[in-house]
Amino acid sequence: MYNGHTPLTTVLLSKRQGEKYPIVEALLRAGASIDKESLIEGTFRNQTDVGCVLLLRDVRAAGSWKKYKLLPHMQILRLRSLVARGRASARPDAAPCVARLISPNLCNEVV
Image 1 (spheres, one colour):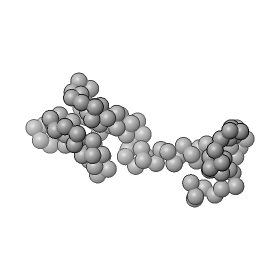
Image 2: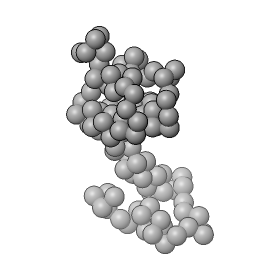
Image 3: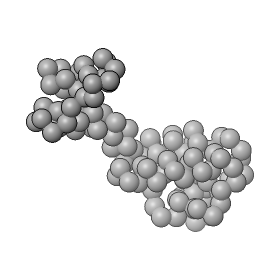
Image 4: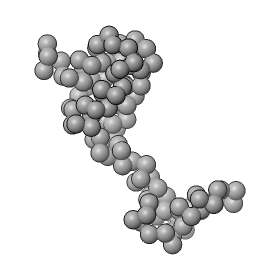
């Protein structure tokens, strides 16, 4: 901790322009703690700050960095499960690659 702030909060409070997002992403990937103090809504200095706070919000909603990064994969698997049970289907105008991706004949390891 530096001056009572976590590394994540310190980066968000810094005045550096345009360099925050990759630093915040690296800290999250390394396992930085996401606490309520990390989401400092009143300190948006530019669009990068907004992007950082949205990233923090999404990672917190997912539960961890790893779960956040696996979310698109899990959504495809969930959709494929619905298709396999007959509760969803591809639209007739869907691209062929989408139809193949949600086909029940495609093994899960490919997705």
